[in-house]
Length: 188
Image (cartoon, rainbow, N blue to C red):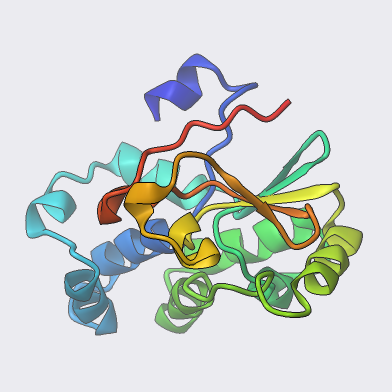
């Protein structure tokens, strides 16, 4: 939050599956979100530390952004297109689902944001091209799926982002939780 406040034109924060899960666990503490929270390593003290400012900020995060030629998204999934066929429509639809405080809509956001590997299969470049044709940009930049899982190496062997799917997709998640690096990637 503070880094985004310091450099709002240079820091773009997106909502991912764990942000949606954090909000869901807070809003629906006696639901399936509680189980998902625990399975994903959630701690009660993390929920206890959430302030209204945190909740408002998390709720306001966009899912998708375009900066120059880069289409930024948390997950390497086409599930975003289930919410619209433009960046604005996707962000508005999900913003409305999150703001509504309705369980089913919020659960849908969480579950769709957990999907992955849509650009890494045999037809990955074609899928990425369709996504770029729909939402704009020249290269998709994503986290979520750790680079090691995409290139078949241990996270501890990862030292740089991975460009794949005929150079249309850039993976930037070094797998920090899995012994890999925390990557900072400069996009020019």
